[in-house]
Length: 350
Image 1 (cartoon, one colour):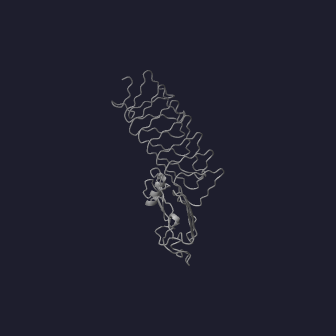
Image 2 (tube, rainbow, N blue to C red):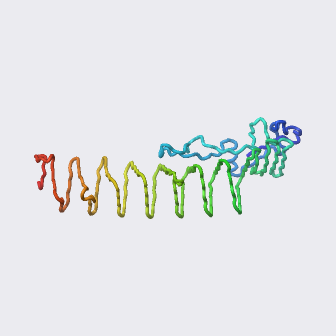
Image 3 (cartoon, rainbow, N blue to C red):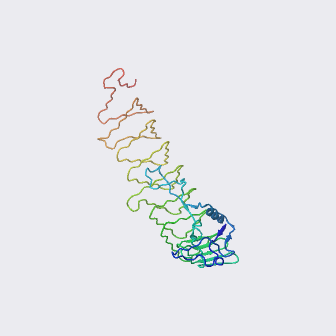
């Protein structure tokens, strides 16, 4: 990777540049003293080559976008899709905080720049140029620590980075921020982790997502008391195993739509209690009610309860042994319009 530092030569351009009456340095791009104009940094690691590629192509680092669950909700709260080509990018600041395409290079104006360079190629710069004040400490490999004129700080590490803090570390960020990694991240916390997000929290995983909880897990939606929704879209299969009890309490309506078949296997009892009506309807097929032993259909209210069996064609009632029909008072059998004919009649042992 080639890193070029611009600025007038304090020896060749003595007396040129400097501060203007308007407070803006004059002059154009120049060079540092001999031996400091260009510094060749050999990219010995994959990270160095990646940084060089992004800097040359200006593509920046991709930033995650919000997902879209429009197929679940007609009015999704978030917008944008992971396939959005207009993905946000995070770009590294320009060297010395100055765009090389600017007509005036506000940096390293003689005699306000102080440069130290070692035999190995290490560099230290203290720049007091008005409007371009900065500090730079740079290793020959390209690892650097730079303070830019507007107060920004740029840190680049060509290799691995280590930070050990024996005590506490407190971080406050007054505006939005972005973070990007091109490799795996392993995070170990030996204590508790608490996150407070006062806005939206939108994670996006392009691969698989695994979660392991050794204890219990608690989730509360609408914790502030105003209520909230929970929406899930699964474009594949869903499997769950519960080794103990499963309890579900719905205070409002519960709707379940199955486009194909549904199979329920219960090795114990199945109790369905309904306080109002219960409808079991097959719009195109049959309803089969089968038991290894008894089937009982009854109404608890002996004064008002009615059991009605109706069929568009025939009703077939059979038993292999005895069939008992008992009426508490009167048993009525009717056929047709209650007038016996050759077609409207009741046959007993025909």
